[in-house]
Length: 184
Image 1: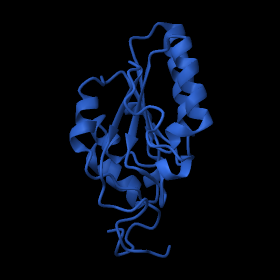
Image 2 (image 1 turned 120 degrees about the vertical axis):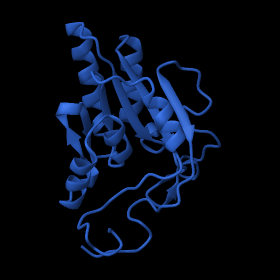
Image 3 (image 1 turned 135 degrees about the horizontal axis):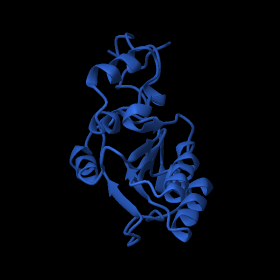
């Protein structure tokens, strides 16, 4: 639908990480919050947002900012934009002693930003009920993350931090779209 201009806004598609994300969701409960970036279709569906609601939001141009408060899903099109909100939510959960947890999905390039490092450090040091999932497709927009930072391994690759999960996958899609350039 994107390639035929029936979706009139950018889309960022997942592919190749189905097994990893399903494994993460084995631990996510209905009362938990899920925060993610502009690539959030899988998270919405796995969190219980009805398929037709996700589809409708994509078709009206909200693909990169899907938010469904009823299912406790929040996404942001701003790089790193969901991370401080996720940490604030974890702080509220801790203060109110709610039986919930925050799951924050970030990409490989976002995981190397200052906001990610500061939020992870703050969460760890204050024992917040939050878990960060770094999804590494080896690229940010059209650049190789490791090449940009001149690193052989990313900060959280091969980590042993119980607050962070890291997985790498290959996708068949470009950063945005489905392989055909579409003018909006």
